[in-house]
Image (cartoon, rainbow, N blue to C red; front, side, top):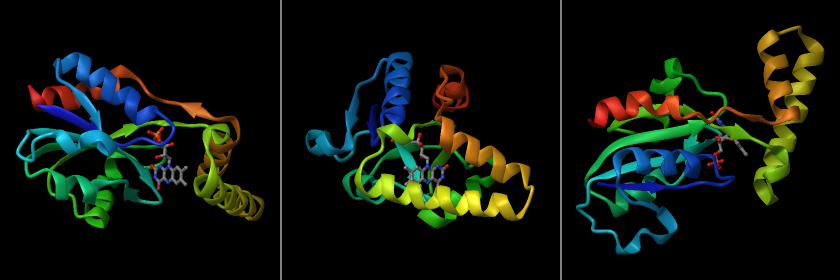
Length: 160
Ligand SMILES: Cc1cc2nc3c(=O)[nH]c(=O)nc-3n(C[C@H](O)[C@H](O)[C@H](O)COP(=O)(O)O)c2cc1C
């Protein structure tokens, strides 16, 4: 079994490392996974960007035996997993893990996209006193780290 992961700011990589230690199996970034056998049993871990699970399609093309998928993100919830599944066409067992967000770690297109999202959220906040919008805005502004080993318990339970 091998963990294949994709990360932008490192939180998915941290989960991959934790899981790799727990399961005593190797972890390989998808960008370096060319040498991993196509029929290897794989756990795919990646981060969510605007509802899209990054590199999931690439992983499907590279590997024929994906056992479980872990989506790392800030805003989705377990209840919203079916949306994520549908949008990305995920057929495997799917888990959502809360990640980390730090505007300072973002560069290029991602920074621009988040800058725009922040403006929209702030504008929305001005119009309504929606507590959810306020919570999101605070998360964006302050930066937040929700990566915890215990979040992996369901994944480990499923795999063992
Ligand atoms: C441009 C952008 C869009 C994002 N869109 C979503 C999203 O749609 N849903 C979500 O749950 N998290 C979203 N996030 C939050 C990331 O998934 C989260 O910060 C994740 O932990 C990043 O993983 P990484 O550190 O491995 O790159 C977004 C982050 C960025 C920068």
